[in-house]
Amino acid sequence: MSSEELESVRSSETVKAVPVSELPNAQNPLSPKQIAYRDARITGEYDQIWQTVGKCCFCDMRERYIIHEKDGVVLTISLFAYIDGHMLIVPRRHIRGVKEFTPKEWEAVRELMYIAQKIIRKVWGIKGVQFIQKVGATAQSSVNEHIHYHCVPFDAPDLSVWNYRQMKLTPLQNAQKYQDLGDKLTKLAKRFEDKYTGGEGKDHA
Ligand SMILES: [Zn+2]
Image (cartoon, rainbow, N blue to C red; front, side, top):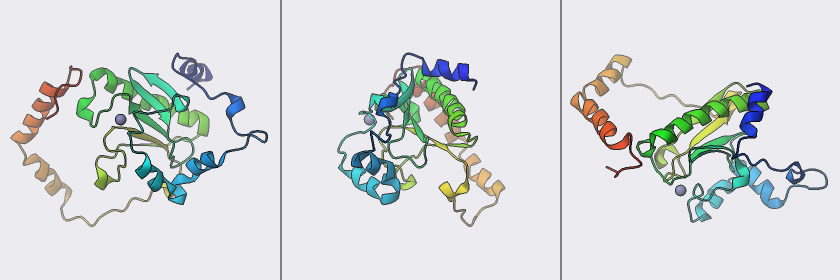
């Protein structure tokens, strides 16, 4: 992204940059609370904080952390980052799954993914990004009721170690497993199209 492009992102109506005077410096050091947030993922503090929140943190987002907004979807800093520069894409509406996105919101998610990737590269010089959506507690999602996408600058494998399992099936057998669903697949596609496209959040199945 050129500096002009970045400037246009920054100067759009929804950007509320933290004034430089509020950034920590020698005269304005970090408070213990700020340090606790910064280090929460490695101190284990996160689990404690998370369990005592008692409300949906994504319905209660602080404007000062928001980097950009488009059609009711925001690109914001993660308060419990995995790495410096970690952002989240979060709809303002308290919705749980992809099927509840309106086409406009979904288009906004795509645009924010694009911007996130560009500004991570611009600010951190990191070309790799992992976009992660965790679905369900077994996938280690702690805020499961309000959909969000992690935008994680990813420059080295130390950040996450992926463990591969011993496979029981070949790729062909795996394909067969899903293909055997046959009609079910067509029905699911039809159901999605009937219920969740073009509307402003119809009823949930
Ligand atoms: Zn919420």
